[in-house]
Amino acid sequence: MQIQVDATDVVRRADLLEGAGELLLEEILRVGYARSKDAARFAQRRFREGGTTATRTARRTSALYDAYDGDAERGEDQGLPSVLVSAGLIKPDTDAEVLHYGRVHEGIDASGQRVDKFTILPRASEFLKFRLPPEKGGGFVMTRGPIELKPRPTLPAIQERLLEQLPKDVEAAFQRVVGVA
Image (cartoon, rainbow, N blue to C red; front, side):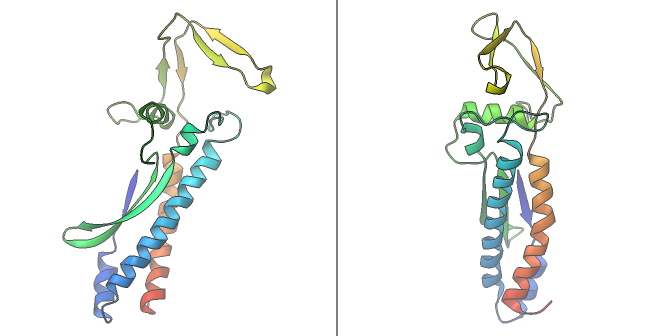
């Protein structure tokens, strides 16, 4: 998921005020990076640790947990400087299997479309094998399948969190750099 902060008007205003545009872009980049990391940590804590529930996935190997990250980078939009803020399953060098697993949990099919469920079928044998958590006796349970898995998405919450905080951060950055509203 990527959210682009449109700072075009702010940058134009800042350029009129003694060339503060570059300082402002650097400040927006800094706060965007911090907010993206915060959003990734939020997703990890709220959706990828603790026991498995309707909205949360138990943390077993930490592979999916560790695949969440945030970043901000400078870019250009219609010839003007911009800051691109990203958060979600974006950690560089994440294993393809982990990304596939994450895509299932996010409810996104191979074509990039949102889905309400996934069907899991046995691959190597005629049974699916699942580890039971210790509080349910441990061990394994086997089923012939197929089973349906409901997604446990983080991206809507990440998006809501970023969109709620970033505009305030950009305005605060403008206040710090330029000193006017």
